[in-house]
Length: 335
Ligand code: PBG
Image (cartoon, rainbow, N blue to C red; front, side, top):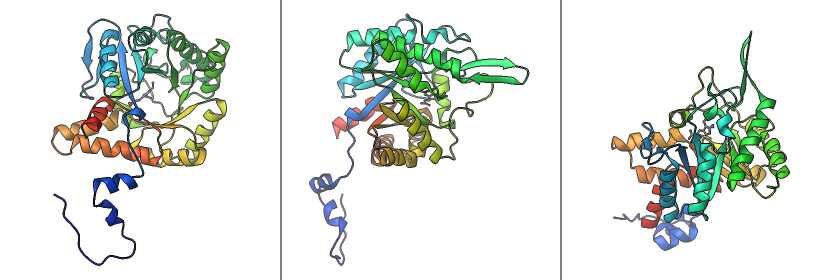
């Protein structure tokens, strides 16, 4: 029931515009639409595999056949795009599964483009899932411990991106945070004739504890050390803007901020300062928190999720990447 507020009306009273759904919609500054959503999916080899991810209820590691079904369900309710992560059978210290012609992502892309040609297929480009040590780059072990070698990593990332596009990917999304990867990938794609394939770069990716559940999902937790040498310090906003500027210079077509909800100030600054197509990634930990609290009956999953995604849009995100994309699109249809 709507309770009416009575009292003295000043000349300007925003409340007047909240009295009817029509008026509210007239003056609503931000809209959330399924057309702005991207659903991340995890693919592994096999058939009929739906391996639940414990910390992410409703999310699974899927074999390519099941992946197509999941993507079709999303597509049916209006989600136009998916973002693929691969879990290879074997890992090594060259991440060879990342750029294998018959790698698990490459196979999945081919199948998706065959079965659902209108679905936009984006692939995550990183090495951590394919490396035995779980790091995003080539690791050199020496007297003074291990280091990640930036430049040799670029070649492997570029090969991985090109192999995804050769398989049919519509867009690649490098998430490794090595310096110079956007340029390296752009050059490689251009050389192979893929001049029209865009790059969505994880440009401001923070070294975040919110990625915890993802590392279970993608089996990509680093065996030693962490990712603070190449992912960003959560304390730094201006640095994030410099990272964004570099990626734009190198040829990124869309820039992404990640995580989303704790970093909406960054989303906002990126959008206002660059006016560039901007994506926000609501990461695994954000999803898991909502699921866990909802399972306890402590919050309303649907209302909290919709409000959070609307906040990302209000902050300036054109695109929202969320594990809840299919549910969200369905809820919006029902509304
Ligand atoms: C790296 C990558 C990560 C995520 C997306 N790409 C994890 C990391 O940097 O450790 C996290 C996504 C999420 O938490 O939902 N390949």
